[in-house]
Image 1 (cartoon, rainbow, N blue to C red):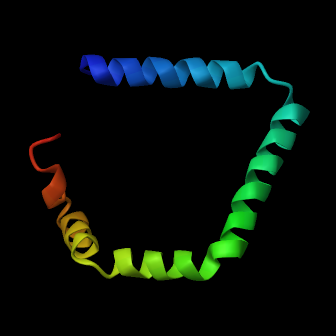
Image 2 (cartoon, one colour):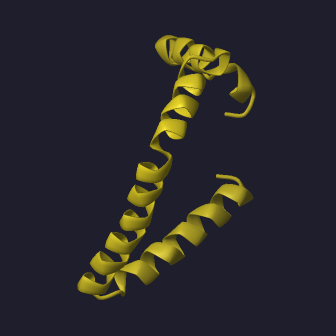
Image 3 (cartoon, helix red, strand yellow):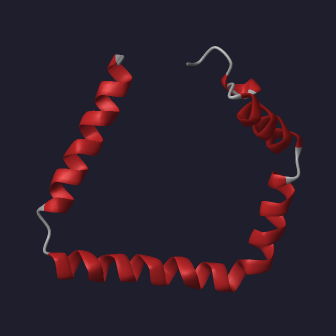
Length: 82
């Protein structure tokens, strides 16, 4: 792993460790509040989100990504990054 990957991994490990110290009922209540907000946003903007999703899943990037996945290769935008 390079330095950036180590930093991200360390940061994630630190956040996970903090979450594991939380009381289970408090964590569950926090998740419920976050989900409530997310679901309300979907309810409010559902049609826009469906249109946006359809646009991305039918676009050139989606086609290139699916083709790369089928070939078990990196998509064009990730070439040389692995």
